[in-house]
Amino acid sequence: MLTENEFKRNLAMVKERVGRFCEEFDRSPEDVTLLPVTKKWPSEAVRFCMNAGIDRVGENRVQDALAKQEELEGVAWELIGHLQSNKVNQVMGRFDRLQTVDSPKLLRKLQSAAEQRDLRFRILIQVNSGEDPAKFGLMMDEVDGLLEEGLRCANLLIEGFMTIAPYAPEDPSVARRAFDRLRSLRDRLREDFKVDLDELSMGMSGDLREAIGAGSTMIRVGSALFGERID
Ligand SMILES: *Cc1c(COP(=O)(O)O)cnc(C)c1O
Image 1: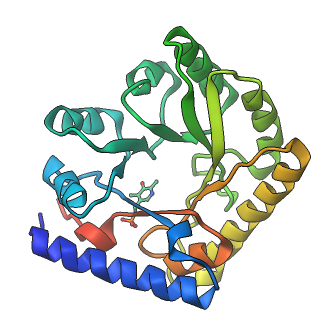
Image 2: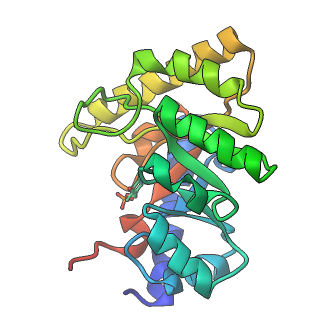
């Protein structure tokens, strides 16, 4: 685990890069939210974020996040890892948003759990924009159907989309194409369904430039802030 000063240096470096990419692509840095990904790290990592004025973090696994929530208050949690539909009750009220809705079954369970609790639950639809069969997320041609059903779910608020680009560090154009595909899909759906769908959660430590160039509104950054964890 790194020290708080090391974290601050990494954070400054990430912000500097984001600023540079925003300038390159003629975007405003305020339109790109940094979501630190604290998975694999203890609650101290979340504390560092809070001390730096960051008010939300991303976690991959429900159980890990819930354990950290026991130790900390005053920060919002977003679930960015796959959620099994039998675990929806564990996220309601505990996570500010779920970024990984990727099936009608999960959607329906979320709707009924949110209805039971009489709350409006915020979600993003996860899209497999690289069309990699080994990955989670809806295929591009399945998104219309899920969105249509989701918009009828009175207790869910669909705020946009999330994607993970294919891993291809030697060829950044692979990530850029995946991000562009999602951005275009979102733009079309916005017209077709007359809804905002403003959030585009795309970009991680290795593909920030491509994500910002393609219009990302939220970058999910782990290793560039906290380092690689070897265990
Ligand atoms: C781990 C993870 C990230 C952060 O990845 P880094 O490459 O460490 O920045 C972002 N999004 C998801 C869904 C992740 O699982």
